[in-house]
Length: 239
Length: 239
Image 1 (tube, each protein chain N blue to C red):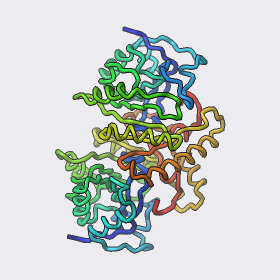
Image 2: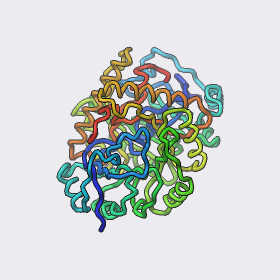
Image 3: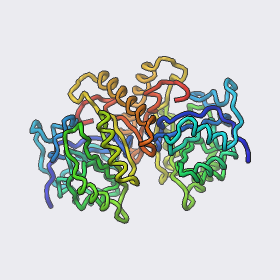
Image 4: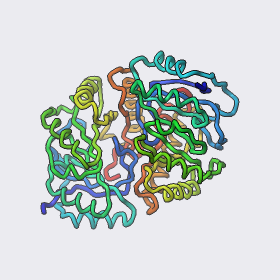
């Protein structure tokens, strides 16, 4: 069994984003990413500023149970890009055997077979403002595999900062019209320490996104959301 | 075909609550309610302050298409309690034939057969702070019927102001453990005109609810949400 590089384990808290918004959950955040998004709000997972612990499944589960004995039934595996780590498969199986649901978010650039055991997969390919390039063939493969019988739900979540990002989102939505589709207002202040300032700018950006989407004929069957955790706690880590 | 008492039709906007949070949608708000919740944020639907138009399906659909030609694929039927009106069945069928999805919210006090044609039913029985009494037998009947083959999804959404409301929510959650369960922070300022003040108090209440639920062993597989529309637009009607 391969160990997993874990940067932080925290909770219970609520999921702030996408298809699992509001869900009471624990977070296991892994280290490492194959992307370097210009506006990444978790750059500490890949910029070398924080060091991960290499952890076995049992150690991760023990830590979850220490933090929240009897107080969770859902675990979010986040990153970085958790799909870099084969060892997560064993963790997901172990949690499943205990009746605990799992969710994951990845940009869809690297596949792992354990994706099929996840209850809620958020696919979040990155728009032009990130300065990253999408591998569409890899994304096609992801969507195709995630359709398989007996697995959980999948959705797209695209972070939007500007009109170019919305054009990219439209290309994703039109390429995969049957996959539930979420648009998320981008956070332009990932280093801002003042919570009120973060909140105000996020809601301004969110209102712009809602206004633009409601006026558009291109986006009808979509959900438009802010980051709830950032509205509550600004850019704090570990909440 | 029975006419429907319509108080307002507006959109496209986003759904601010529960299982459909963030969804781009049109709203058809009906008049009349069998409840008088102490904190109702749509009391104009039942307090006599605003008069409905009696509308036929075609008139409602025409109005939707005038407001948002080609810009919607989802309609929320709201109230008041829309389940008072048999005529909504014809509207729901007509929208369905055009490929338009529908959502409804009701406290679950009165049943209509057209509930089975709705894609997303939010059941929102009212906690003690409302001063209303729940008819549990009627709610049992609702949940049982909504399990029927081939119909859409159903969920509970309980508005929470205080600990007594949370005790009530727990009774609902334990009685219907397999129904997706949402807790929503209550809005204590339904007459406040200052948007910033509404926003700050809502987020304070939301943070209290998140904190209480994450510390509890009683609520694990739940989602905890604020009212997104109130964060954006305060108590304004018609958005």
